[in-house]
Length: 161
Image (cartoon, rainbow, N blue to C red; front, side, top):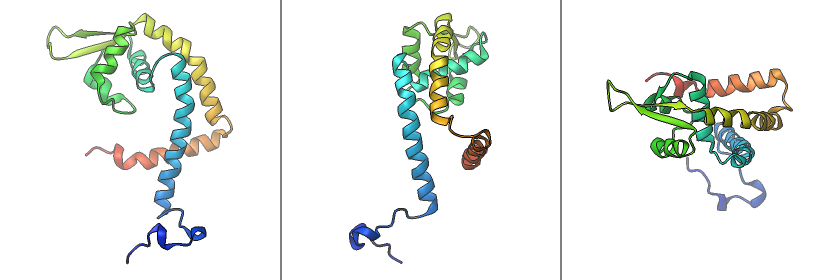
């Protein structure tokens, strides 16, 4: 069965979505865009990207132990298309330090610096306030439901291949 094109429907009868799955996807995308816009304002005040923030947070969790660049890349929320360039920027600002392992020169390890830790402290309250604006109107039960639904949505992607 052929699907009608938008031109074949009267303007007031245009279907909004092809399926509930499409509607869910588009609602999620629209929500992400709204949340991301507000987050970028906060990160912009500190001249940092969300990926850089994510990397610093991951490094802070394991500090003072270094983390191999490959392991850092695997733990990132979104895959950095150019991890080296992102780390270059953080290193230029003295927010991280990179070291080659003596036993295997191909492995580069990364640690957060005191300046990187200080930046995370400075950004903590504005990020907390941002999250309150984004999610503060939801109850604890609603937040838990949302978290569980998002995890369930990702489940096929999170399972090992």
